[in-house]
Image 1: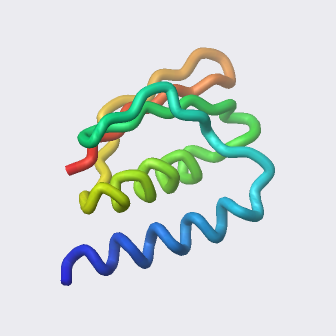
Image 2 (image 1 turned 135 degrees about the vertical axis):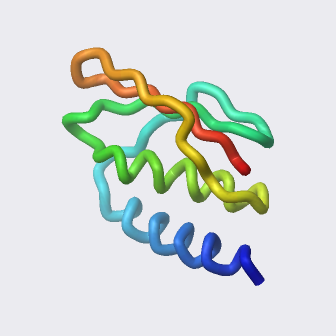
Image 3 (image 1 turned 180 degrees about the horizontal axis):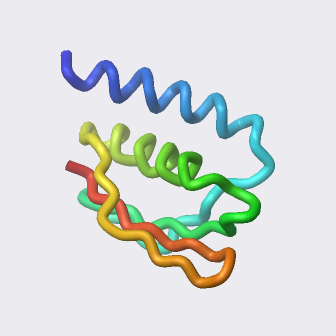
Length: 82
């Protein structure tokens, strides 16, 4: 029953991302984590978090941000699926 809110959030995020022009791209992924990269001037951090959340939801887990590195307008974030 606790997984249902994550599923609903993932659906909402995916629907909102469909209207956006770009998405972060995946640098690395495993069952326990995903690392994303995006241009901060084109994609909001919340969108990247939503993509990570949707990925972790597919694994039956929640998402937790571990780190974010910024260099100019490039952002790289590592998320754990917990």
